[in-house]
Image (cartoon, rainbow, N blue to C red; front, side, top):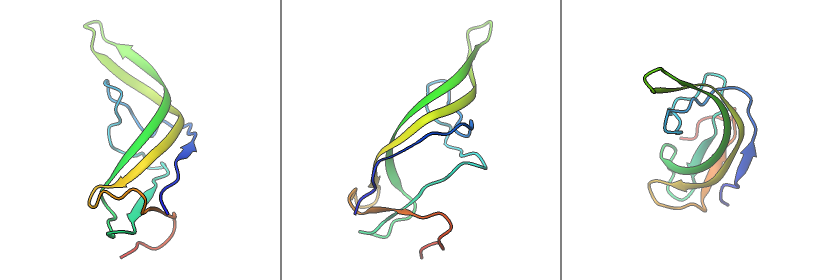
Length: 104
């Protein structure tokens, strides 16, 4: 049973983008975090996640030409695939439901 690609829309700017368009890696305090578990090897911590995001952002250029990206709003986010980093299995990755006890 693999992870089904998901699509969601968010209005908060919880995923700030760097100047190169990548996320900073930090989730905002109110962000919905999706956790995964590989049923094949038990991995809970390392996954390759391919995501497509459509965002709106304020690009602020300094007089010297340096770019600062502010007020990022995620309009749409789609998870295309999730693969276990340990065993390489993509078909056995499951979503851990929010509020469920941490698997051991």
